[in-house]
Image 1 (cartoon, helix red, strand yellow):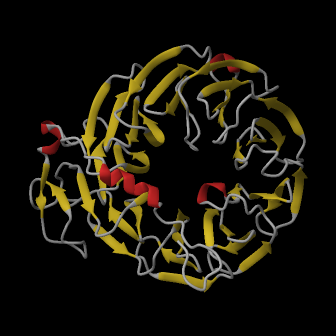
Image 2: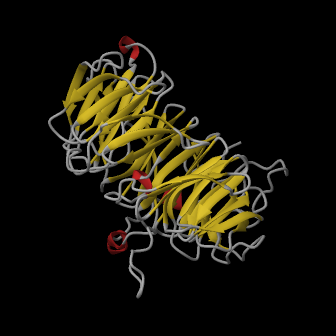
Amino acid sequence: MRLAGVQVPIGPGPRVADARAAAVKAPPPEAGLAASWSRPRPGVNGADPAVSAPAPVAAPEPDAGASWRPWRFRMSNDVWGTPAVAGDLVYVTSFEVHALDVATGRRRFKTRDVAWSMAVADGRIHASDGPTLFALDAREGTDLWRLATDAWVYSLKADHGTVVTGTRGGGVQAWEASGGQKLWEITGAQTDFESPEAGPVVQDGTVYVWQDARLRALEARTGEERWSYPIGDAASCGGVPVRLTQADDGYVYVSAGTRVLAIDIAGGHVRWHFEAPAVFLSPPTFAPGPAVTGGGVYLADYLGTVYALDATDGRDRWRIATESRASIDPVLVSAGHVHVGSGKGLYTLDAVTGTPKWRFQAGGEIVGAPAVADGRIHFGSSDHLLYTLKADDGRLRWKLATGGEITGAPVVKDGVVYACSKDRCVYALDAEKGTGTART
């Protein structure tokens, strides 16, 4: 949105297009799933009165010896993005950042500032309301530091004690995570795609910036350039942002329009180059190990064609067509399988041969990236459902109907799947059984 007297739009926040979810009537919950949700009860520990918790009425304390039960927490405002789980707290963004207890769903605290961007790392919550950057103690929510930025923050990432922000107008800044001191700043970075997922990337001490038609690798603490590569401008990259994945084999894998490159992290030398007939919207996925066990580089173009490339030479091992894919999320590789959400279908292929294993048809387009753990795959759809399937054969284990489209991607940790919905609720569900039976 644009305010009077302001030269640039503010946000990003929830997109206007997301309102379409409100026009879609949610399917009725299955009886076995809905039965375990209790009526709303008064707020506890500062929670909103609209909190819903599973029966019995009194939520079990984590140290009371009672079995864990699924829970949901209802916000007073919209929820967006992917939840972040650290220790015994789950962090979600609903204008403010809310910290919820993973065992009971009770709110530990919420921030007093709007947070369009959030990153949880090293015991701190790093967030921005746009013109302000601030850090909070991740356990108590107390202020650690805050400062005014010179432009609107649209991208925020934290790694190894460094916070990296992208600001509207081509700015990139690095900040000391513990105290907020500015470490360095550059200007003139790409301004064609100023969105959270297209901002500068920081990983293991290296910041990757798209500037002056070059991909630049900078030292995270000093901003000193390690190397740069002429990747091209927006037009030469097919009118889509450059996406990249830094892998633990010493290479960064880059998708730039129709091209895929493997670049040496240390020196910037291109190991191989692959050209496809259609552009890639998402970053490559790297799977370690030899090709005969499913190792390699995997990605899907916007037409839905899935590619398996040899990580050593970029050779096209196999490719297979699915349906049109608008997702910016990478494909998922796990336990010898490649999982791809394309349109309303979730496709699973053999990572070695590309042989189709199974396909699951949802009632709406797949939303976000699926999550795989313990032989199960979890994903959301625009049909307001959260699905859990067996990862090896695609059989439905359980599904949950919510009052809105799932936002971001589900997160699985310690046998619990966490998800946010546009019905303003955060859900914590048993990854194996959903809400039907409590865990022990």
